[in-house]
Image 1: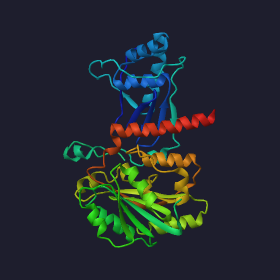
Image 2: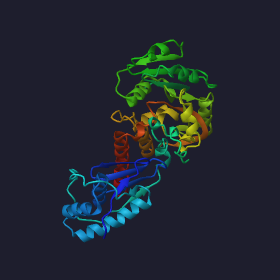
Image 3: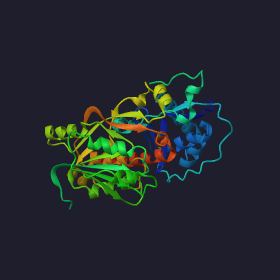
Image 4: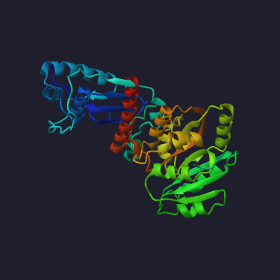
Amino acid sequence: MAERRVRLRDEEIAASIVDGEALIINLSNGVYYSLPGSGGLMWAHLEWGHDTTATAAAVADRYGIELARALADLDALVDQLIEEGLVVADDELAGEPPPLDDGFPAPGAYEPPILERYADMADLLALDPPMPSITSRPWESADEPGPSA
Amino acid sequence: MTETEPGRVSCVVVSWNVESTLGAAIESVLAQTYRPFEVLVVDAQSTDRSVRIAESFSPPVRVVSIPDNGPAANRNAGMLAARGDFLAFLDGDDLWHPEKLERHMAHFRDRPDLDCSITLVQSFWDDGHELEAEYYRDHQRMQPVPGYVMGAACVRRSALDRVGPLDESLQFADSADWFIRAEAAGLVVDMLNESLTFHRFHGTNLTRRRATEDAAEFARVLKRRLDRLRATAR
């Protein structure tokens, strides 16, 4: 299985880890996601810039499972994250980031990651959809297309 | 217990270094077709002319000065000082439609079960941002959005007391947290499908929500909600 790297779509996505659980908010539509357990650990490593092999190794080490199992579950999760528009594949990321001092709580038994999706707060969270910074002044670039609605 | 006077609306205007916009905000309250009982300008140690501008208005405008402990503390101070049995909030850089309070009060009359009435929020650009206004005219962010924020809400005093004050440890997500707690408390919240609140974009508030600490706050608020739902489901 090939190594993959992803990048957070941070123009529209905000994410944070709380008590080992990843909370991911799509600011453009107010849908939010939760990745508890092993998924939170996977998210943290991916967001830190680790490739799938390094991330799976960290998960396998933390939970005491085989690397191949962690890699297979991670690969499925990455597909899902891309499909939901939360991350994009980015193999151009330079260098390997330093180890992640994640401070995660002690793990229980390993369970494959489950991406939970919540649209019930969409109205509440979509009040302030993202916009490029006004300091970038994109209209000063003749080639820059207008923003998408 | 707070003494309330039936049918009267207290307007709480949040002020913190908003000298260029505060006068217009207060005037938009005073221009209401439903006359507010009192207008409390709650100022958190502004270092510009905000207090002087607020004090230049006659009653029912009153200035309440408080320590600077963030926007949630500002609104909480307004709740404590307010004597009406309905409270409506306005940020000192935003504006109300002249019929906002009238529509809210009609909403409450039509829906006796209603605890909190909100409106759509229409954003607009501050003077000096004409290029941005033109560039982003069709952007998603310039469309009216449901106003699940204190600045677009009119709330029954009794409902505020049931949910409790805003969480003053939150700098950005205090309104979202309050509405989530309102949901948990069983409050009836309904939206008027009209843009009656106008949110001003200016240089200092545009990218605020995307800051890292902002995302972390919203994540904490959502985590608390998920934990509560999971505990209930057990």
